[in-house]
Amino acid sequence: MTRFPALLILALLCCAVSLSAQVKKGFKLLDNREYDKALICFQKDVNTPDKSIPAGYGILKAAASVKETSTWIAALGSYEKTLTAFNETDPKTQKKLTSEFKITKNAIEQAYNGLFSTTLVYVEKHQNSTAFRDSFVNVVTVVPKQYKARFNKLMILQSTKPVSKREKLDPAKKSKKKPVYVDRKPPEGSRLEFVKGVNTAGSEYIPVLSSDGKIMYFVGSDRDDNYKGEDVYYAERQADGSWSEPKMEEFFSGPINEAVVSMSADGNNLVLFIGGKPHLSTRLETGWSEPSPIVLQRDFAWIGMASITRNGEALIFEAKKGPLDDVDIYIAQRKKGGKWDIPFELGNPVNTSSDDRTPFLHSDFKTFISVPTGTEVTAVSMFSKPPDWMILGKTGPSPKTSEQGSILPETSMGFVSRPLEMLHI
Image 1 (cartoon, one colour):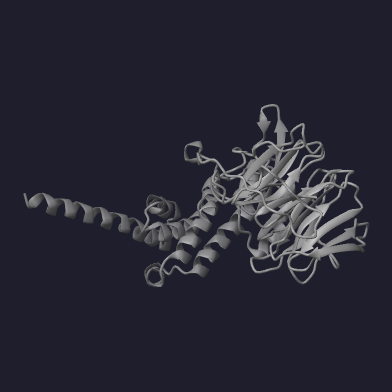
Image 2 (cartoon, helix red, strand yellow):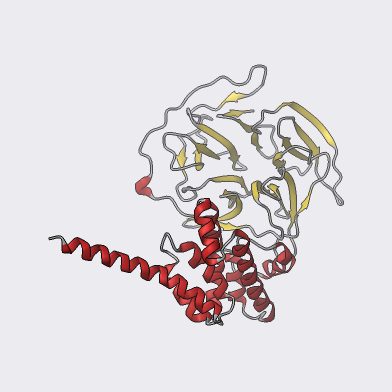
């Protein structure tokens, strides 16, 4: 009876030694420049929790020297996972990885840069390999600074639509709770009316109206019927002017933050915020198309509110260049081939020293509205060539969390949201 547990323990120890041996063998093969064999060793351990970091690092190192180009794409796609795992591990484990395998944050980044360079050079030399070029553009989420200009050229040439990597809603995990709708008073002294039948004890914001005013999309969070984080909801205007009970747009909602941030004048295109990046979805006979990322010729750490002008010739959006930068407003103009030109930042008085949020261009192309955080809502004239901005007027102070809103074309009616509530102008 006592021998069986002992044998079992011995077997488990052998398995652990075998797994560890694969990584160590891989690094020895790397030193001997036997890259294909090293890659096989690392691939065996890449999904093993305690070996995933050295295995992931080894894959980046080995992949750059193998001839199979599909291996490059797979390795590039695993970079962020490896770097994040290293950054999140404890200092003691990091020290052990550095001592045993010479793995540091800089070493992982350098290995990625080397593989990125190898792939970039190959794509530039083989311009007819459009499928491989597009796979490279789609998989890359981090572009090393020294290669940004060259990578942007590939983005312009991209022939296939980028693939959305979003995780979709699982109906089995959807909340079955019914939300309780509340009634609040609008800010004292304002001409705003509270939207009944839409607001709950949670939060509702970023109202987006169709041009005929019959459909309203908005973001819901902390609602009883939320799936996770920020989800997309919609309501339809009834004959008596009231709104139907909001429904979650399950196709656009999921485990990350999602929002419809604008709708085209004909109602056939939606610009969506999905995980900090802008996406576009088109109306089909069977519903909405899978949102595809909007490709811009400039990298941003985060992009929030975005809209395509009524004539389809410009994309206006708020964005942060880097994680610690302020939010500023940008415009990208559409080129003849349909691609977006290099975005340019709007100057004074639109972009200020604080965060400049929620850009909104009226359909008359004469009035542009933005909200500098913590200051005042600013209305300015539409840009000319070159841009020529002039302040038209200001309204009262905005809260620290910026308002968002939309105005119906050719009317003075619109909707604005403040923290926790949605109001009607």
